[in-house]
Length: 407
Image 1 (cartoon, rainbow, N blue to C red):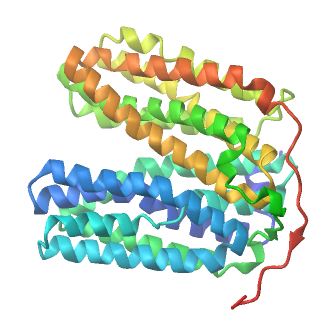
Image 2: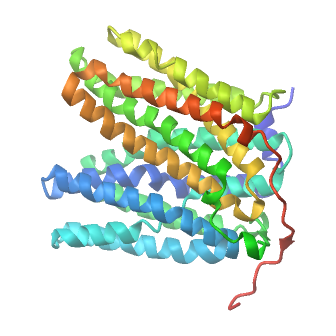
C-alpha cells in the first residue's frame, strides 16, 4: 500500500525546498515569544517586552502580504533575498540595542524594520501548488504543510524561550535570526522548483485581498485563529485554578497533537464533497467542539476535551488553503496564501487579548465563552459564504518568463 506523503516527495527538489522552508519558518513562532523573553530579562519591564513583540507581530501581519505580492510579480528569489537581508539586519540591530540598552524607541524602530520577514509558509505552499496544481496530491501536500506549521508553533516558541532562559537573554532571537538567514538561502538557491511568474491583466492588478472569496476565507480564519489564542490563555488560567499550573504545557501540546494527528489522516482522504462543503462542515465541527469546554471540571477533562477540539483545526486550515488555490488566480496565489496565514495570526492575537480580558473580569472558567463565540462566527461565515466559495474556479493566466536581472 502506497504512502501518499511519500508519493508527494517523489518529484525532484520537493524534499529540498520543504526542508529549507521548515528551517526558514521557525522564526514565525520564535520571534514574538523570543522578544518577550529577551526584553523581560534585560529590561525587567513586561509591558515593554509585550509592546515591542506586538509591534513586530502586527507590522509583519500588514507587511508580509505586500512582500508576497511583490513575489508574485517578480519571483521568489528576487524579492526574498533583499527582504530577508533587511529583516536579518534589523534583528541584529535589535539584539545590539537590547544588549547595549539603547533608548526604548530604538527597540520599536528595529522591530518594525524586522517585520519585513517574508511569510515562508506561503512561499512553500506556492511551490507545492506549482507542482501539483489541480491534482489530488496537492491536498496531501497542503496537509503536510499544516502539520509542519503545527510542529513549528509547538517547538518554535518553546525553543526560543528555552534558549533565552538557559543560555543568555538574546539567545532565542539570535537563533531565530540564523534560522531565517540560513533557511531562506537554502530555499532560494533551489531554482528548479521556483514557481513561474504569471502574467496579470492590466485591469486586474489590484491586491488579492480585494477578492471576495479570499476576504471570506481570511475572515473565517481570523475566527479560527481566535480559538488558538483563547485556548492558550484559558488553559493556563484554568490549570492554575485547578492547582496544577505545570499541566498547562502538556494540555496545550495535546491540543496541537489532536490537530496534528487528524491532519495527517485528513491529508490522505479522497472526499467527494466539494471544498466549499468541506469548509462549512469543518467549521461546524470546530464550533461544536467548543461547547463541552464550557463545562470543564478538572484537568483530565480539560485535556481530553481540548484534544478533541484540536482535531478540527488542521482540516479547516488544509481546506482553506485548498480553496485559496482553487479560487485565487495563480498570478496572485502567494499573496492570497499570505493573507490567510496573516488572518490566523491576527486571530491568535485577538483570542489571547479578548480571553485575557474576559478571564480578568469574570474568572478562568469564562475564557472558553470566547471560543464559543469565535466558533459560531467561523461557522456562520463559512455557511453564509458557501455560494461565493462554491462558484466557478479561478481565472488562469499564462506563465511568462521571469524578468532578467536589471529589468
